[in-house]
Image 1: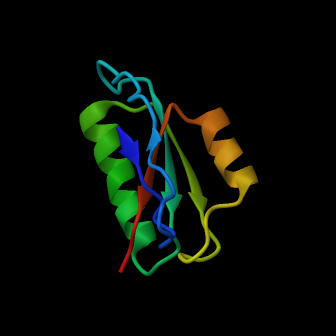
Image 2 (image 1 turned 90 degrees about the vertical axis):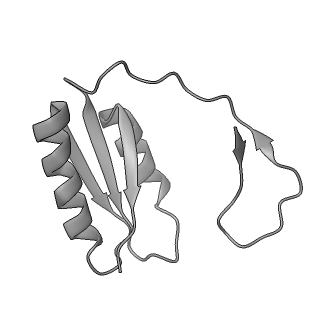
Length: 94
């Protein structure tokens, strides 16, 4: 997997990151939702939560919101999500 930065800077070299193994299913997992703070991102997150609980049996949802869409999430927020969630979805609004 090649990971590129969304910061608008030309990459000096693409970082190679091995893909993580997929979960066989999501039952009992905790999902983290990172809202980018744009309009309607919260609504998208609510819908994801609803679908993940109903259709995939996730056990819990941890929600965090970035201060602005233009900035990355603070390290503390990312650390909290990493500690509490099995996987994280980052949502966009507008």
